[in-house]
Amino acid sequence: MITRWQKQNRRKIGLTGLLFAGLLVLLSACAQNESGEETPAAENRLVVYTAHKEEIYKPIIREFEERSGIWVDVVAGGTNEMLQQIASENGQSGADIMFGGGVDSLQAYEAYFEPYVTAQDEKLDPAYASPDHAYTVFSKLPTVFVYNTKLVLPSGAPRTWQQLLEYQWEGNIAFADPEKSGSAYTALSILVQRLNREKTTEEAVAAFTKNLAGDLSDGSNTIVEDVASGKKMIGITLEETALKKKAAGADIEMIYPRQATCAVPDGGAIIKGAAHRENAEKFMEFIVSDDVQHLLEDQLYRRSVRTDFSSSEIADEMRYDIAYSNTHREEILQAWDSYMGQTKRKDE
Image (cartoon, rainbow, N blue to C red):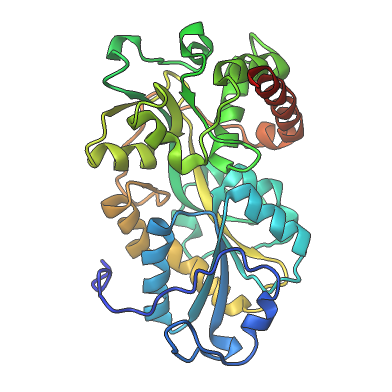
């Protein structure tokens, strides 16, 4: 295990927001950080774009810095926001790693990543592995429903994706924008896939957006907060987020959708044109190491992607169709934009 994970007084990570413009300048030669510490030369640097929350990436990156001696610059944002930025920069930003984002989202942008096979590849769950090694799986993230225990009886909580479309939930579902949030897009794609025997993509999205009543959570991180506060009665989120909030004492319960729980991993990928390729490879090896994968399960409420770990199985787990999700991505998002726009206009 990592023995110095909680060590105090480490250098503050250089999270400075979306500093896309001028990032190359920051990477050149030596400089000083906010604390006046001298930063290392370019060969000892790494630039990480991440869609992870700070509580996930910060301890991992701090430990990587301490073990490797590599200085890491972090730029954080939503999954789709970061991926679109990578595409617009097309290898010219100086960024090295995309850390986080569902594998369906990463697969959709594989043209902007360099293939890489980690030394731990044979120990990683092959279920959602990149066929071209464009990304490496990092942690499993089951999609779940949550409900406010003061507002919803256990017997009345939705157990299936179809039940989310029932009239009593209109205006009472917490959900994020799938055009910005990778986890929200994954959830929307699961809903479409589960309903496609009964409804077309447009019919499924239209029915779901009607029940959202034009109101979205500010982001994927606030979905559980909206449910716990009573602003919404139910929500669709990740197991990790729900477990953390429940452990903190929130009045919520979590449900694994019946015969339709998908544990879609997120991952990491080396960006084409990475200025610090060797350091990027070291980081990729680190995130699938025993220590980091144990940390996920022991402290971060996530499931490991290592097959040599004894992670608990998920009842009624359904395999998520990445190929379908990517092939129909534009269709799903166009339907979302169309029907969500109509719902907002009616609400106004």
